Image 1 (cartoon, rainbow, N blue to C red):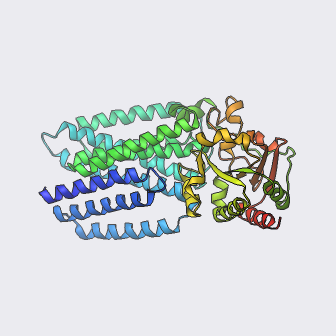
Image 2: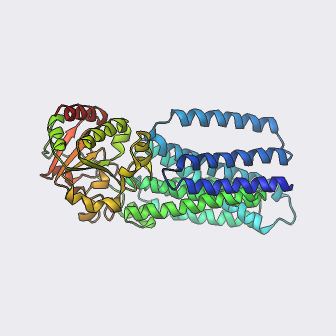
Length: 458
């Protein structure tokens, strides 16, 4: 490789590193995203000019189709569907790495003295890439509600899971010993099956954590394929994705208050992610927008807890207007952001940033939990599991052990919900039946619009 190409790859790698740094803060996330895209484009341009590329026309057609699909898909996707898009893109990356590794088996099959390290990398990439692809497709289907979001179990699942894992490891070893393309193909099929079995038992609020884990696996598969192709940039990029995905998975598991093993396999022993999902017929206290407006209008401190329901209704702009009106009347208002609010980390931050909510008003769980005792009103907009007291009081509940926002400590609680259906974890929230709680039923945007009008008329 020429010196200029090596320098270009180095510049692209630096862009990737700076991109990750930029994505660590909402203030610099846009710049970080642009830096990552710039590095990827630079790497592609260098590759086309540096190497003699076979089937150039077919590759350019595939790039054009992928570019159009990516641009159209990214522009059309709703904010509520962003986690599904992440899962889909992640799966495609893992599948691509597995296919590349399979193709590399063709020359290795005829090589009388293949490199041992290359064969190990091929076996690893085919299996892990296939697992990531299949698992990501299942998480996409769960989040898109193309299948049930609850754990899918059958009596022999632990046995089938164990046999599939052993078979995958054995076939990966066989690829190293006998680098035959058909062995690699069988290994990829076993990897696909293992990926499906890995994600099926996961349900409820644990799905985003699995997406992060699969993202880390995709990064490792890409890094291994970089070794196979002797491409240092793939090795660097894949390692960055694998490391950051692993770190994010660990942080999310800590935010849920559970180990990764419990998240992945807890449902196999009847706990962890299992939720009932039944709609309660117990009586609750409800009110109209005018009553809630009076409650807010005479408060001195209000804490708002946004959730997935806010994103579904696209009500963030109306909520921002309501907060502005309350603030103009001397009422202190903050947003309490749970680490896993919505469907993925940062979901609520991005949603509220879209409505130009001042970053200073967004308070993370650890910094605001002690302030609920001083709050006159806690306004919960479309959230459920992240404020459910069962996380503290009900051993065996799907979310037991997960740190939650201490909404139950506020003087008054207002829940904005479409219905009494349970949250993503599929369990009932006792906070809805607390004497301090008032429910305002309806679509979040419609209810907030009426609430805004009522507050203005006070």
